[in-house]
Image (cartoon, rainbow over all chains, first blue to last red; front, side):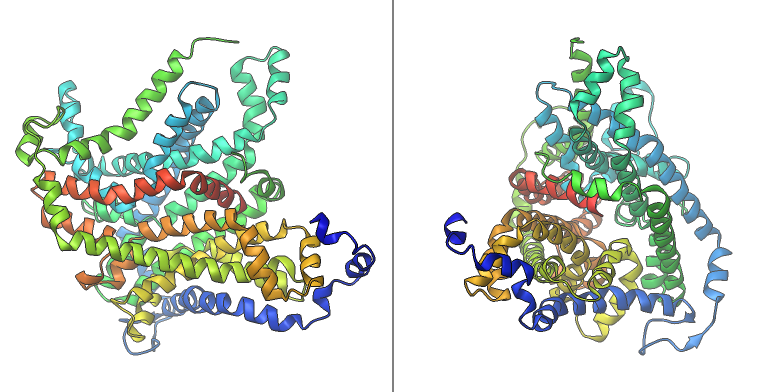
Length: 320
Length: 272
């Protein structure tokens, strides 16, 4: 760089006062560079969502161009009157509660543990995160075999203690079992986010509290935890958004069964949209998912994450 | 302050066992016969049965699915990274009316659950005759990958000092020349990160290929795994072998690209 700029001292201030790119026709460049991405995005992201919103007001089997048989709010009234859908909403609530109450605190605890200089922590991290790269299908098939009531490894192990369970085959245990699999696959991901956040907390703050005589728990509760706030709020956000559209894992593990006990909105939507060709009705379900995500995202960003966005966006990324 | 780290290791070992036991069980299970699996679930295989693995490796379908998954992942990544880099360049380095609005249109896309769009996308692809065509999956995945990729790349492009662009322009570089010959080579780490994210996302995608591909010849690995389980429900050992072989590419990729993957995810998570 120095060789490039030396001897060019004179034009530099002029260039800065009037950036050279302004002199050419930037509109050409701007259009040519943004257009491909914009077209693809409008065509395959925005338009389909608009069509889903539109189709939710029609009775439509998905054939013959845009739908014509307008039914107003009928799909939605029918939806909210359905027991299966109300169960979907209930399951969503249960899984979110379990995620926020069990999975994320667990991930946080492990992250705090691995932040300390224990020997072999790099290996632990590598192993704990590994399930995240396996597809939900592989995870699902693997656990449907492990949790199989008669031949599965889980019951063969626990059988010795008389702790067999029907796991995925029983309406009472299916949801916690699905949650167990989710935790297996995703806790490493949240752990990684927490670790990255923890690494950005200056060690002096922790040490200052320790020197002042704070117990490890109080250091965690009053120094580490508040400083991890932005990171925790983002992991909560990702967890909730993921749960709203949960499909792959449930589809592979149970297809929503037994008797709809683990069904999610996305599973119900797929069954009606593809299984029964009730595309209008299924669109109403996807609109509910869309609305939930949107409202949650807006409210959450407005009231919970607003303070964090600046700080969080700049704090991570090159922590290794 | 210094205390023994023994309890820490104990906890880490228990969690590690929770993660590893299923994977090791699958790996060893693939070397057993299904009878062995029920009589000897915990021990090493005795005798070691290799046919489960060799039969999968000898079948054309596994390799075809591997190829399909690879092709779709590479094509998706190439498209999403190129288009995002171009758009991110403009968002990062040009000032014009409506820029922030346009950028917001893309970022809002982060909040759109893919599941919401699947029915209209299916109908659209059917109308265009793109069912059972890899292009239908590739383009859709690329479109949904745009928001995150643009956000990450824009952040990186912004951090490139303006003086470099000025120097290049004075030396006669066109905007395209600057983008292609200076900005992109400088952005290699960021490009690697977003590419790794795109590859993993595509590789693991299930919902879209599930509805787009009905013809077995077009199936990707996740579809193949699901179908194989359905076909050999009672032959657990064989399913385990298939699972392990389907896991290997992802785990191998993780071993190679772990740094980029984790860096990208934490960056993406905090910028989303």
